[in-house]
Length: 421
Length: 166
Image (cartoon, rainbow over all chains, first blue to last red; front, top):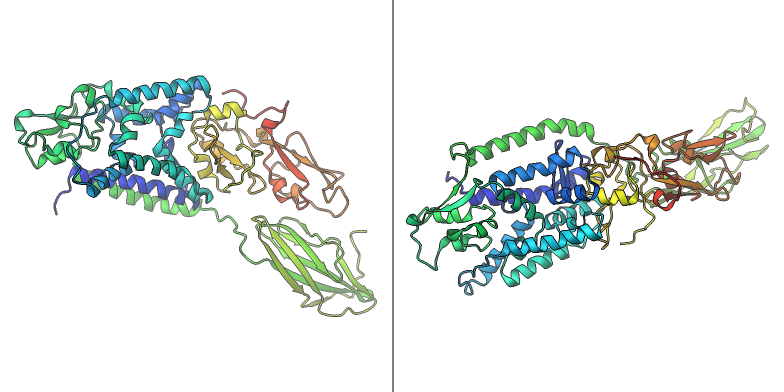
């Protein structure tokens, strides 16, 4: 079997993350709660992960942070410190859709491609936007409003709204609008020039001069100038060959240029403080991760069965009965009963020839009429006695039933004692 | 798209201003709520969108306290259910079936999670809501006569929120 290249791994992982945030709300809806949250804050089997910018906003406004948030923000920052901004290229679902938009543009309009012009100061612009936004937040707001600019969070939140509360959030218009603008202009506008969430992780990665980065060996390069494979492959339209420090801050270590260069001169390669022998073989890593995932699913399968709480759905028909009892002196007493063991009924209204009170009472398990209905004294009533019931459920729907007396209990040795009086 | 401004915050929420400054809008409380009563707020208000809300008319809080337990940023303070002050229930005695002597209804009392503390039965029959009321909204949800209305704590002056201090 041909060993997949780095780009295949990356794309698979991106799609896995994008699908995971669709599946997680569905799992939560069916009461599986070991994984929950969105890109602002996330819990996975008790491990917290949080957006560093969101945590920074909370910390600045409250001068206080929780351990949960501290660890949550630390994990992505440590990732950025060692591997650069791999969040943007390996995890962020907006990055995935943005890359697909650019690929679509290239496929639909291939002739117009004449090499990319170089936009060096993407990070400077992004930093300026970030400073203005953060100053606005600091002066005007107490809520973490910059969270609303997180496209990844909006992606996850759309499915939280959709599967959690059956509501189609209009945020998809925002996301599609951005993607459309990026399609028309043909540039990764949001990721390179605006996204405020990426600023903190970029600043963190700059602290480590020996982080993972793409290095260029000039003597190995065999591409014709102007037709570089790496330039075409770069997802952020940077020039991988000329990655100076000002441009390298923008590089998200996606590795597409390295993959493209492998077919040519192998001039581009990853370089990091971690020896390459220490890095896990991707194929082995994926196999072990799959095994671990299978184990987790099986292990939590039983737990899931325990955790699942079967909350009543008000879709079953109500069980209503009417029982006529005969007491001494030819006294006939009618008892109405509606079974409601899970407490899903809000109100029961009754109507009939002998029914005086229109509303029934509950002891949470069943609904009865109180006081009991004395149908007749001294004479035998005309049978059957039909009672019309309107049962109103908590979820809003109503059911109408006509209940007929089916049996008569003979209790004629006792004198009827009405507890109401 | 209809939604009310008279919503409750989940149990253990701090005062409204402090709550908003701490809420990460991550929606985890809505996802762990087994009763599906916590909803994420909708709308175009960027300060409020994504924060949790409870509408007791649609689905009341059962005070299971899962949400305040998992809140990562402590916007929902992990408190005992006796200290929860989400709102205050008011009983309209002119509508209540028992108070109007229409019939003997104990729907609210049977379901109150803080029975005999938040709601007591005067003379054994007549429901009275005391100051211990957590404001979960269960009684409003079940009242067949619509006699009970919950007012969120943030609209009440002089009533303390739950979770004083950090």
